Image (tube, rainbow, N blue to C red):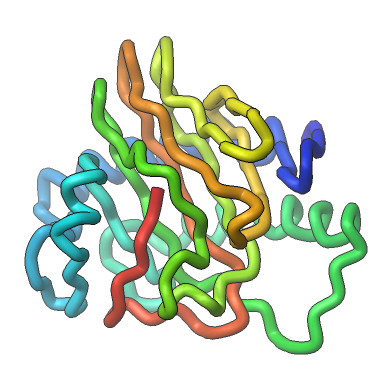
Length: 210
């Protein structure tokens, strides 16, 4: 695994094997065919309903995965992903000597499918709502990337990060790291994102995203 750090953004190339990324991509298409992708535009069995304004800015498909009981993805690839992600997280906290007097949770994540010109292009940060204050750090891993476009852009750092399959990013959840996802210009993008939090994940509230 290759490591690089820019303004408290950890960039981990080859952090997740391409074969595992492809497995998530293939499973997503199977989940869509079986209609197990969660529709965030209306109330669903998880009680999730995103605000209208948020939906106007966000145009992509989302799967919310809670590994302990989700039927969207098989447990083995999810567990394997968490193991690779944990190595990135360990590198990050060691790099910045992060100390936290409590349990850090990571028990829910989302998978996004973004087609040409779609995505969440609004500038935002991961603690931008009262229900998000438990978020300490955000992470994302690129599973499928477009031939052009689809960068993750950080406002105050004047930084655009190219999407590469198997590349994982970790960054602080606060306002210092306002960011957005740029639209794919040629091809599609698929990625995992989630948060390291001070509380357990709750699928009964709006969990937001990029």
